[in-house]
Image 1: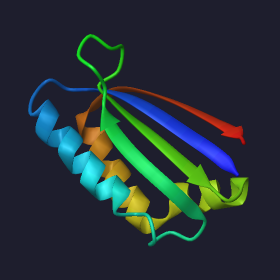
Image 2 (image 1 turned 180 degrees about the horizontal axis):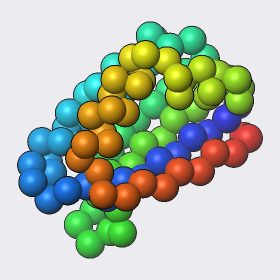
Image 3 (image 1 turned 180 degrees about the vertical axis):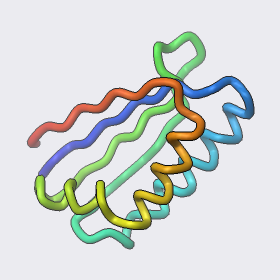
Image 4 (image 1 turned 90 degrees about the vertical axis):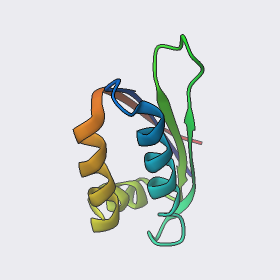
Length: 94
């Protein structure tokens, strides 16, 4: 199993609404992308270094790569790129 974690800093305009949209669209990918076991998005506490975080689980590294290029994920990622200022990610085997 692979854990994939992403954190974002977002533009200030409509931040809460954008996080809500990210959460809805990313979490809707569970069941649509083979190998994606679980995915959750949360708004980070005020004062945190990041605005939002994603925690997801995949059956394998290959499944994570499939997710990254899957058209449904790419569509959400394209939106996120329009509202993010910075991004960091970490992947590891569980």
